[in-house]
Length: 239
Figure 1 (spheres, rainbow, N blue to C red):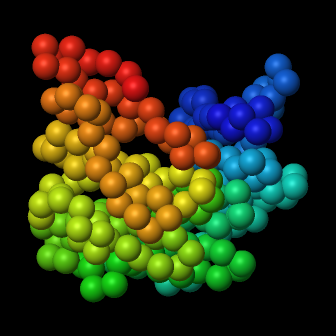
Figure 2 (figure 1 turned 180 degrees about the vertical axis):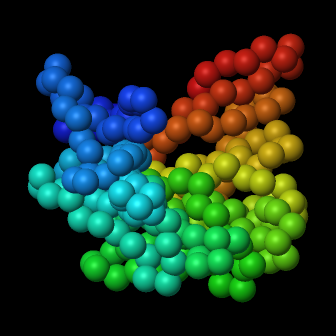
């Protein structure tokens, strides 16, 4: 759902296929990539541009963008089975692909007609978790193929890890990071009793006074944070 243009996107099944749809102003409209045997819608931005994936008549998967009533295929140049997952308000797209061996793949950024790998420098694997409407990408990475080792923030072409910020997530301890439009993230580390906020280059702990656990859940465009905390009697409250 996009509240700016009051539009809902989704998918529905029919026999052995999937269709996309738009719901706006009380009207449902089917949205299928022309000639596709399967269409899945994944994300919509404030201008109404939609991204997703489709299967052509041979069963090959492609990513696509639907913008200004026009469909455009997105295929990562050195892979196959591309999917466009998120699109920011500035038009930046994050997607994934498989390599030609079908045994691995990766993620990419598509911006201004150019595909760029989404890889934390030196990492074995990088896996984005979320993208905010301003184009801030968050996720995890590892350097040995054994699972999460750390978390990253990608903003304006720069990667920042939680280790860089001194945030106390231990190795193999995954963090959830939620980006907000004015820059930065809020989040929490699994197994910790507090959250944190990182706006404008400054890291601060989020720990509700007297609580036994604080978890931020969402953040507004202005940086206001909402979440839950647990008091001394183990009751949960919203803040």
